[in-house]
Image 1 (cartoon, rainbow, N blue to C red):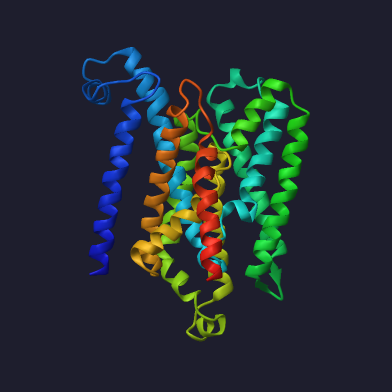
Image 2: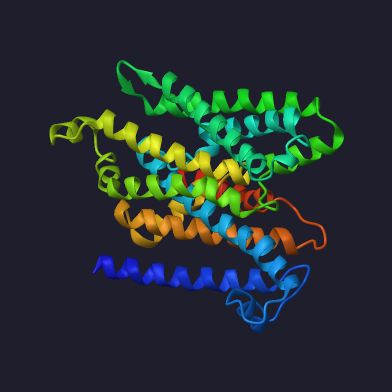
Length: 337
């Protein structure tokens, strides 16, 4: 019965996501009719102008928004499950800050010099972001071990400290930039997918295809981690090993997302909470619903970001934060009662 309820709920989210994608494809600085979009997608009477709008601008942006939202939603569920802390997310752990610092360093040293490299030049930015996110995660992971086990309280405190350090590094490097590069770096750090392209999608897709199935396969362990550790160990679960696998998988997902979208906070906080309120406490149900919620939130936020102040555009991370900060405060108040 629960499985049927989860599938029904996912069907509703699929419908909402499809509606959002339709609105994003047809609306913008240049509005298109449904017929024009369909003919362009199906390659019927192709128009170069419509091809440019759909395949070079709108569709890559929609795909990245969907993948990033799904990835951050699922990873946030894992982090909250491991730490048993409903206020934990990738921003708090400092992974976003690590990826952001690496991108800022990339922009400082190489921006404007790699345009003649084509695809190779485009690939370098997300690779730098991925390396920075993984470096931050490894530092956090290393300092979070205490007495041969992963200390979840130390994990959060270390994450905040490492994130602050990388944030300070980003600020220092960005202040050394030329004005044009500084503006670009600021927009990226705020969370933006305005420069989405198919190469960015290809750079993050392998990580999601490999790591998300691993996380879902081990979802039942997140249910067990809500119990006392001695109880979980007594039933034969290798707690530290399984926590490490799940944490590293979620770190890989987060780093791949942040490397192409910048620092989009609060999705990993909000999506798991919304999913739990809809499907209960079983992580086998929470994970797919959280991914769908994250996908919908980022798609909606990106549409608002590009249309609310048209022709000006604001970073999608700012829109998410406008939603996320009140939600975070609501959760804090709720935990007090």
